Length: 242
Image (tube, rainbow, N blue to C red):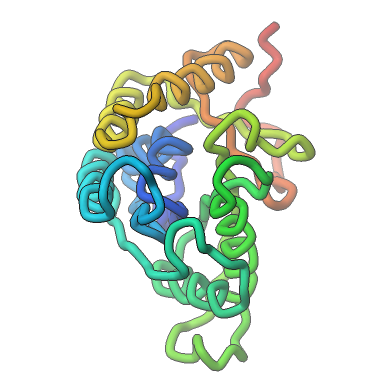
């Protein structure tokens, strides 16, 4: 992908917990930010239910990681870690964030039910919020102009959380600067990486995805809706290397 072709409208990324964005799609954030796109991260809990690290430590780690990635960051209070509910109130709150940031692309956790229940719940909330952000008649959002995003993509935190019914878009994160930023951002979550080899796990997934397409590393993103192009040249490449 040519960096000169990257949209400069904001990229908005949602995570349920302080490290989700970095582990799940940190390489995407790093490259988009380096290419000149404003990136805003929204974390929907402070990891209160986690075994490793206090909420204060985890918030500080997230802020350090966001700085490494070149992104702005905010925390929003919904139900708290391990308590997230899929409800109209929360979807409307997230729609307000979308209207305020006015992104062209939004990333959210996969809807696949796997591991932490907050991940799929947040994915559903963001999906609903992206639609609500368009509607002009919602009373709670009257102070903000309606906004339509171009694309919603899901990211997966584990191999098992990757949707089986959606073809992946492989995002190339092979260049050294992107990989270095991504690794540093993941390692900023020191309270978590001391517990399990999360960095190796994510790099191995990205390496396998990349090798399957003849590149170094790739992060799989899963479109919520079909991708529309008006020229075949808009599709840069396909994962037909073997």
